[in-house]
Image (cartoon, rainbow, N blue to C red; front, side, top):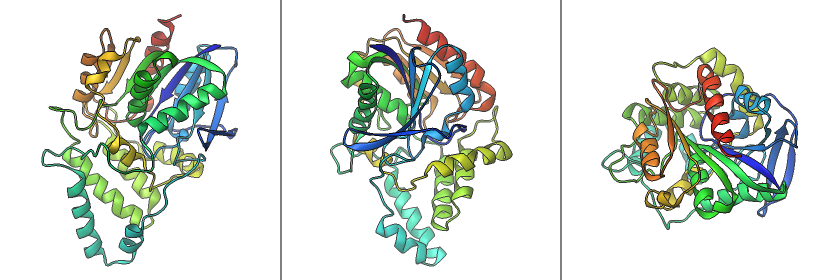
Length: 336
């Protein structure tokens, strides 16, 4: 069977340019996927993260990997894009939309106070109820590998995608060739790791209200601006053009991704079980998953390497795509 590269990613990022696509029924759901390049080359599978569909991957990154003789496959996670959606608009959201603004803002404040603990970290709820968890999402990826008759994969994941990548490496180690978590965490509730910045949590409240008001495009711009670092600032004009394709692919504001993260077990102590070559990529100014989370992964996985990008937030900024592409390709090629 072919060797494979599995790339997983998380939140709001640059675009895609292909209108091709396939839908396959895998792991009891429909999964939308597309591919690029020569199928005889080692494949690369791209997997997005929380509330993010496949069109958020930078096309330049895909092209760069493909041009280095890899076969690139990209797909929508469950509950976003053109794959099966599980979650619909909650009744509470419908009620909030018709309430006066002052009452809505009060409820939003209360909701966010429940999301964060006294240390400002996202509250986790292992063993709680949700429609699915990260293990289910990892099985979606593995099922796609099965569908494509691929035995092993280089797994690259960012943010929630990096969490899924860790789960695959832990629960399906026989399918993993190398691992590369990007801007990810062993678990938001890991002891002694900081929570998101106050400025970012404040922006989440603004975004939430913008979505309630039907301003989906403005909410996406607000989020992306809040995710940016000082060395690689937000470019509204550039991202605005990319956003059209992202939204047209299917943007589920009420996906169960955060609930899936919340009920899934912390992976920190188990990371020592991972024996495959690992590359951790992280920005020094990540406002939602601070750098300490990436360094914790490095410290737990023996022999892992790191790429720390000074002044980068929680994104793959256009200016650093060539450097990240080269680092990833070198990482893939370290294992033959």
